[in-house]
Image (tube, rainbow, N blue to C red):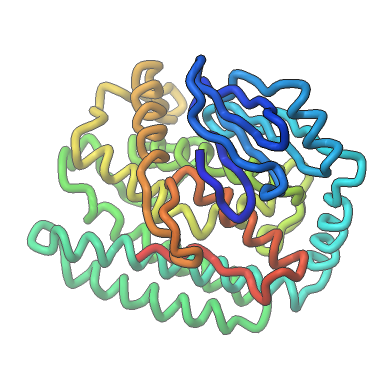
Length: 343
């Protein structure tokens, strides 16, 4: 269990939540693993839960504190909240922001600048660790370009300009991505980003990882009361979770891209974990998908120091922290949205 920004996150899959006086108590089987006074919390988020007592749910509802239930993979299930919970006020302010071109552009610029800086950081890490095994000059030039493009993104004067910068920078980043694959070059060769369907094993892994990340971001935004479909960078489209995709942008490179590279370079997955379909699509085998998901769950348990909070946080909690920071900005609790910068 972890308390972040007055929200209690319970990540143990067999945890059961109960009420003891004015405290929320977390059990694993018959063992108590933690307790906190309810008055110190704004909400509780539990992933992979065994349940929560009706007494606790009723108490939280009466105190205007929400409980959010999710599956272990981060998929949103349900929310318990009181009648006066202020999500409607937060969402109305979110919609005002989205409809205001200048305000929405300011948020989008910080997200895309962070995306490009994080992509540069992935390349910089490769240069630091494997300079002798890669085309160091090409990778270094691309890393420098991404850092310059990140500054341009932050200074963009329109949404169209920002999309142009992001698109060009993404193509540049993926043009050197194959340099970062250090083993089985033929089986895991990467010649460029493709999707719908992915046409090689690396793209299959990236697409699946991005889908998992997007699912977590949707749940994180739902948990804090934001509408995941009303975005600031991705335009509105029926059925498209635009704000979740916005939130994904700054997290793709440090969370998914590095995870995929590690899985390949450390031989955690093999060519036999994929199959080629008649239409050219590449997909996981059932066993390959199980292996990928198990590795993903392990990755989410790794910890790092959050660059804004300066607290140790699990990687799997980063989307939830960023969603909370975005909600805090929209409510006016902080002056600007602090995107996630990976170092």
